[in-house]
Length: 397
Image (tube, rainbow, N blue to C red; front, side, top):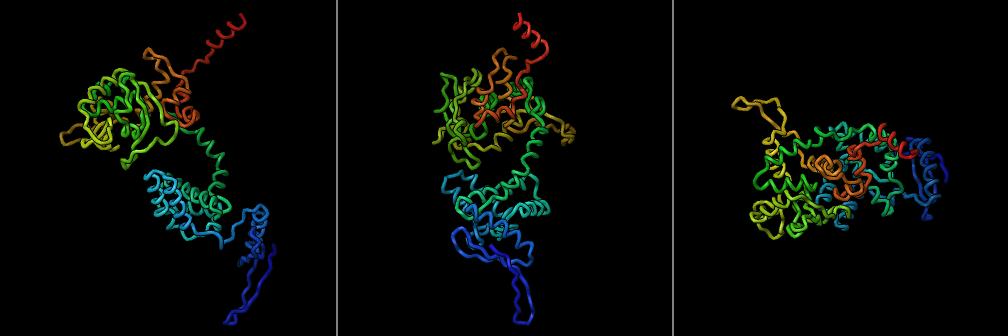
């Protein structure tokens, strides 16, 4: 590995100077890299020396642009049969948030400072913080795929994530926990909602309340997966945003959930009126096909919330001079949060609160850590002074 100064005269008689790094790569091929400044040449030489020694160096001629790597990344997703929604999201990120800004850059030129500059550019272009995070994450995924193909030595996105790890831990510590009455409906609100349910949305929303299914799982639930005699639901498939049926995203998503009599009775009645279709869905649209998530929210959940009085005043006045009301909880996931809180504190209703591991299984979480992080603070706290005193007395006699 050597760094030398090169001087030459152009055809117009102008003398120019550059710095050349002369080295042998991991394949035994001689490589030359030219730099305008010596300090840049020295930095590259030092980095390349380490990479060659570790056997991970990739020369510029052996790598590809971000755009090309992105196309290979999408091809990998298609070959591994990722869901269509995931493939489409990759295409959108690549087309609108990556290629216009860094698409022509070689992977070997992308560094941590380059990523920081890319984030600044996205911010200046009006991208939201959430979108910036997603775009950078996709870029990191592109690099991970390129590494497996031998087109990149390092993943600068992963490097920058490592540097920010402590900041993320601090952010998690400061993140607000879910609050009953703000993020999770109260028991009284749920009782009012149940009393207001009617028509085709009643069995669906009752199932959401007392089984905690995700929207995709509700929309993909089949009659053959419902055992009315055993009073249990079997989650074996889901419907994505395009209405395509597939298996749950994780192994933990496939689960059996017992349901109370109110759900069983509602399902028995609904089965007689349910539109028939080739998919055998329990909650289809009028044509027997997969119901859309938007319909469930806008035609089912929100009107039921408002009718139940689980609403807030928007501050607007309608044509008749009345205050306009909006649902206090507008997302179906709030019912899933309620289900988790109900499992944890069911003793309030004469039942038994479930342990953390069982709550994880009922929710279909891939790890118990996820369950603990989201819902751990809802578990009853019994380690108080009186309990400690009683425990001491019992131990010491």
